[in-house]
Length: 304
Image (cartoon, rainbow, N blue to C red; front, side):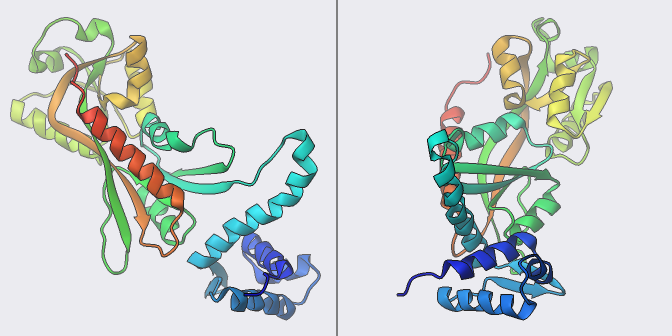
């Protein structure tokens, strides 16, 4: 097998980052046909198509995305040579993570823990709604997506859904609201509550529980962001309906405590990937780590 022509690779690298053949050709002072020839020679050398056309747009194929990752690392070596004595940069592998905007920040950090602080890994995190993130995953702009509801899997949407963890949901509040002994029904009638928005599984489960108990709690706030729910609980405007992981630091510090567990109400976390021929190897490592951690935590006793 002959050596790779790095001039061909550099032309591909430029087009992949620009996303437009015509614009790249003008910037490099080449004709569009000449640039196309260089990329075609690289594709012939690699034995794979690197771009596919959708209308007037160029989109990377799966092999194109992998080639771009390697090209980024290869062309970073020039900077490394210049920066070695300054101890600046080293060649790094990239992990592109999509996260549902309402997902617990603590869970995100827990999931990424095995790769945080590693000099050989660059982490790119994008947040958004599930449909946007899954579209980016399908276009290979993301390696993995964290969401709280498993997507539909069919021939047109080849997603692989990995159930990572299931966290119990409890009433979370300040010590003055929760230390006094009380039944769940009495507590919910005495204190205002802070709830996730109606399009979440937690809210659906809570509303069903209230219907069974015949309780109409005073809802002081409905929020679709876990970080804001956490802040409102800290501000002591009411009892929040949350998984304890969302306020883990506050519980450790004693600012908030975990009160009555809401039996049967949980939040499930999923990692969604594509069935890819060349998956990012970091993805498997992270999924395995989170599953082991979740299994260990499930064996711990709950709050007293």
